Length: 431
Ligand code: GDP
Image (cartoon, rainbow, N blue to C red):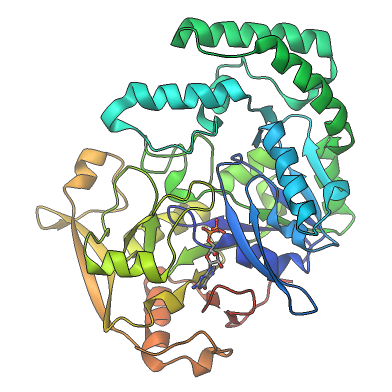
């Protein structure tokens, strides 16, 4: 299929989007990031044609770069910390993935500076007990600067004197707001002069680039960062990220109209996880939660933090489907449920015995919901080696079909193990 295919996280992130992107990117010419920064993290276990496995950690770069035919595009909606961008390129090169010559960045993308990262930490301290649990990568402060129209963009780097002047003003503003903190402003300005030279070959007008790519029949894959429930408007605000993680963010972040999007795939973990603070109605603070954490290896790529775990929440997913309009789903980490005797799925939220329509905006209200679960029988056998949907245990298929029935959406891919090869295709028709 020509046009644009989008892969989006449908829950609170870490659904395993990277693996699907890695598999799909073999058939795509361009893999793009549209929002977020290096706060996102994909871990991909890639097996090369000789059968050697390598684990790559992607933070800012599109993970489709593993495919040597694929060009990586970082769109205007992304915020970029240049030292981290180069560190990521260098780390991939050290692992044998030399992809710098096929990575392009929008000249409209915003810059994240070290002072944004310092401010991120100071903000969390200010918030005290109600801290949002950000990754302290400066992403939030950089988006704040963008919204208040004081941010610096990639193109600003190439007029050094004006850049230096604007940069000094920005830092002064932060000192006024947060008090003086240790920061070598002039040293930073010099460092960015060198970084700008190194960056130059990567910088493009991404609007021209992506529209040329699509109109010349190239296949474009967009890799969503973060996930729907972390969206600045529709997530569990304020426990969210600072960008638009929805399908809307794909259009604004890349400068493309909705009609170019031909296929939207929602990635759904077979249970629920979230990092940091904020509401999580189906959280299991018990043996089930610990089991999911251990078996699912639920530790963050970027932060190493343990993720909170709970049952799959179909109320969340229905809401996610409404906003993103997925065409189909990729259910991931189904194998993590292998050993459980029974599996619960959240199907309704009740307040005072009455079903709540949709997903509550008000966190006070959300904290009062009583979650109603459906209980399904487990399959208690390993599915990791299963390669065809029909060969999954009956109870396992029942679980998948329960989700499909509830959401009225097909599950096209099913993750049955960490490796790239552990992905079942139910009925794929993407390309
Ligand atoms: P992302 O940011 O959405 O790509 O998710 P993460 O990087 O946090 O999660 C990816 C991790 O989950 C990697 O270690 C993968 O190997 C692992 N993973 C992905 N799919 C599956 C699966 O179906 N089963 C299991 N057990 N692990 C998986």
